[in-house]
Length: 123
Image (cartoon, rainbow, N blue to C red):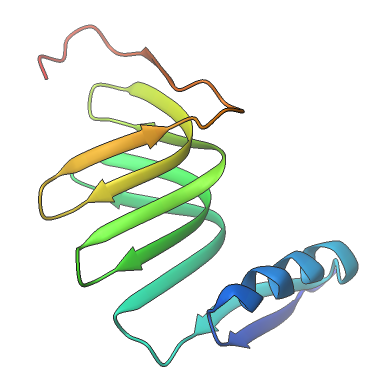
């Protein structure tokens, strides 16, 4: 079956509700774009992958804010795979690009943990 491609105009709080509604009630719809008039903030939804500096982060939603160069990725769980093949999981990941600082928070529902690694990495 061919999916109907949908673009949303407006990336505010209502965009989350529209996307959830499409997933639940219009199974042949695929949200492929979200437009905003505010270029200082960008949002991505539904199986988001962020690749940067030998890391790959996956979640269900990402918000990037240009003012503080911060990515916030949410999901249940968010997963980040680093250059040493270590996987860290949690509920929310906050990455500040300017300082290269990453904070993973599990909240009360998900335990934050790191596992794996290839054994040859020194970082």
